Length: 226
Length: 201
Image (cartoon, rainbow over the protein chains, first blue to last red):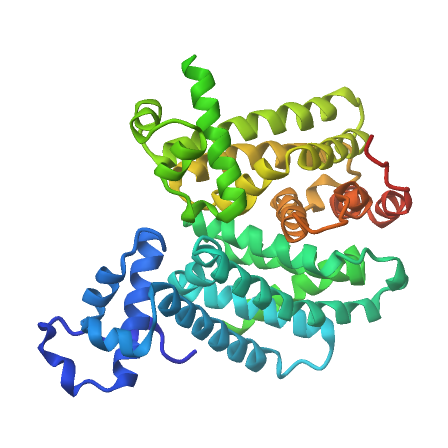
């Protein structure tokens, strides 16, 4: 994954560096500062003044880029989502069937979460607390994943009898499980988390035995690869 | 007397949050709606958040009394869970503003409300996870299954809250499918799905 926030160096100098810094650089600094502060203190307790100060960007240049703290936060959310989608697309490219794609995609998402829990906090926890606009944006993002999950119905013997709410429920359930762990800072056992989420996502379509087999195989492949 | 005034302020805040969103409601607004004053509000509650927490405590208590009560009256799972689900749907239908306040407005707002949410959801999770006691192979069920089921149901409900013409009781068979499937398997879950929803009074 490109551009991990750790790699973004926020200089410690005074506010004098402004004129030499490009819009792209300022955007980058604001992204890093937003991720750092909001992940640590929460959206509501991170003031715009503090974000600007941490980013070493002047108020005037902030105003040129974003309209508000919410606008700046949503840009950070959108970027994290876009980069995560790219990473998942890459991870599933080698798979040629839906079950394998799902397992690889879930594995990739968990890897991203473990690699940078701060970004995950922004995309899954804080976005739900950042007001109606952010909440709506978060819902839209989740909805985009539903059709991919729905493809699993092709593997179900009685697809038409599956509940209409199944996909939104599965996504909601998995996000909830991850959300709870992120909110409490408990991500110690990502393997069992991955095994459980693969079972939850695939069992209704493939049956318990096949979902379990795939979960076990995915974990074995990963431990061999690492 | 003091309790009655506290209730007036709490009710005013629930109403206002329903109308314009919790963040857009000020203490002054609440005082005006309750026919009181900022000073009186501040004598009763240390802060806006304290008032919200008191409201949420009341919501959790009322909801749990209804849901847990229905659960406990049925001797066997999943009958007990089904009874709890219908009681929950009914409680939501009877308390739309409180549900809005609890679920959409403030549940994620702070550490304080987070602890309350954990307590409330801990109770829901326990009712779902009671399925382990009747599951043929409890060891095969992932440890956080009930958590996922409760999260899934919360997601489905929160999307439909306040939508015209949606009778949450109609969703109970689908939600029961989700809850029963991991514990008793596909066939038992399909039986829940096929059962006609029980209409509210």
